[in-house]
Image (tube, rainbow, N blue to C red; front, side, top):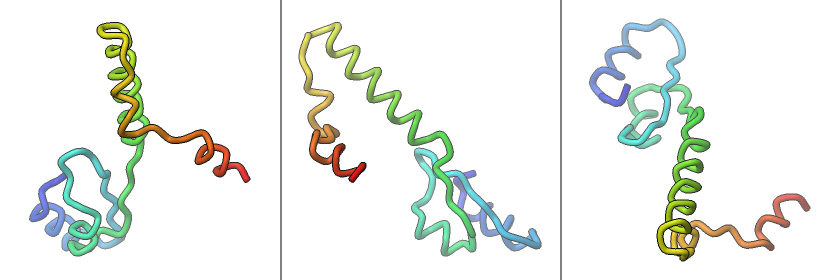
Length: 85
């Protein structure tokens, strides 16, 4: 659900906490919290976005043999190592 008026109505009608999935096209976290949402979850969205990037990288490697798709999101080796220190 991404329609703010519907989210407000649902919150008003429910007697309890409201959780909403953050998906492409969804309102911002701030907007959802302002509507009374208690929990915003990315669910499998982060994993699906990662798979989309992997697919784009693979397609570029097959089609042109270049690596530009990695440029914007490349997580350096040191940053990766720092996650485990």
